[in-house]
Amino acid sequence: TGNEYLQLQNDLESNAKSYPVRFPLVIQKAKGMIITDTEGKQYYDCLAGAGTLALGHNHDVIIAAIRDVLDKQIPLHTLDLATPLKIAFIQEIFSILPKELRGHAKIQFCGPTGADGVEAAIKLVKNATKGKSILAFHGGYHGSTQATMSMSGNLSKKQHLQSLLPDVHFLPFPYEYRCPFGIGGGMTAQISIQYIENLLDDCESGIAAPCGVIIETVQGEGGAIPADIEWLRELRRITAERGIPLIIDEVQTGIGRTGKMFSFEHAGIIPDVIICSKAIGGSLPMSVMIYKEELDLWKPGAHTGTFRGNQLGMATGLATLKFIKENNVLDNVKERSDQLFEVLNRLKEKHEEIGDVRGRGLMIGVEIVDPQGNKDRLEHYPPNGELATKIQDRCFQNGLIIEVGGRRSAVLRFLPPLTITADETTKVLAIFEQSVVEAIE
Ligand code: PMP
Image (cartoon, rainbow, N blue to C red; front, top):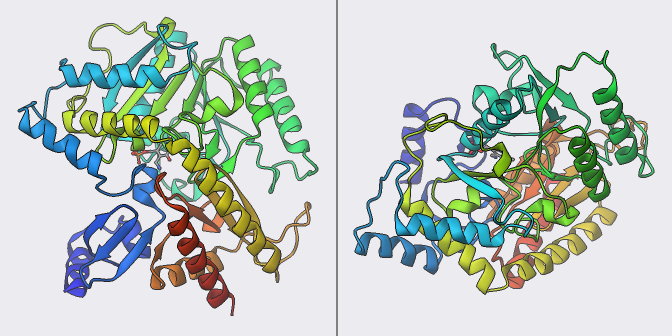
């Protein structure tokens, strides 16, 4: 039974497990956004493989793509050797790039995980620029390996771990709701960019020449915090002026999640390096970076890895990209996003415990606050992780899987498949509202 499986998992699997702590279920099968556990209970999946499952679970085109690889005897493992499938996948990726990059960019397969891509990107810009420091952002998340953790802002997860990269400097992210400068009124972005500019120009700021700036345009694990669009343009301007490569971590935001294929397109900027993972593998492990060709100063074999030829992942990734393009999935992202925002904002008006509703596309965060706590300088109540977890538990009981994130884990994060229907969105919102009410009572 489910309980026996859970007991075995607890007995045998590492204490470092994360999702099973919050979602004690054993999955029997899944299709679209519905997960069915071993007891036959069904859940709406608003976590979608932490943003990986752009088309939901086991979409027909994904299954067909896998069958096709098997039928054609395409080798499952090819190191980084070429296959016609690999070339087709690369061409499809180039076809969705902004025109400024097409013909002027290179792609590199980095291994199975997002962290592999981030590690590779840092090595790439270090090699190309000889810069010594890396600039990253408060509240950012880039992975769980030593180097990627060093660039993630969440100290609570790493403060006891030694030998993190010594040369990472953190910059203030334009988080309007809890402005790092304690000022409001739309000033956050302006002050934050001035601060960064001054820091880079001040020869006494203690920052060695940077090899790059790494950023998520919408912080995912950090609590679905979107960076101001004008601020992103300014960040591009000041990094371009100083010759500092801008690395956009699109691991979670990429491939349609925010309503555009790449999240930086909202700002109309062109990054120097783009890192993609999660959705680009169409459910299977895949990580790539795409970068301006002038950075391609590697020597052959300068960055290797055994698992850079996952043909199944290329087939499912290719099927995902084609499906998004041919079925107006980006329009659906915008419509479902509007639907979610409208109802969540209405909920916010009803409940003091909902402090903020924010995000971009289908990456939406609901920050839960404590109306009994002291207001901050911006007149906002403190984050309430305890209540957020309680709401999450109620959601789970009521058949909705939704993750928490952000400061003190106080943000409930909507990350559904990009193909979620209007009807499914309505049902998800109904369960959410009911769970909020139950948790507050
Ligand atoms: N970057 C971002 C923005 C992410 O959201 C994540 C994963 N949540 C990663 C990097 C790391 O990806 P992985 O867990 O596959 O290593």
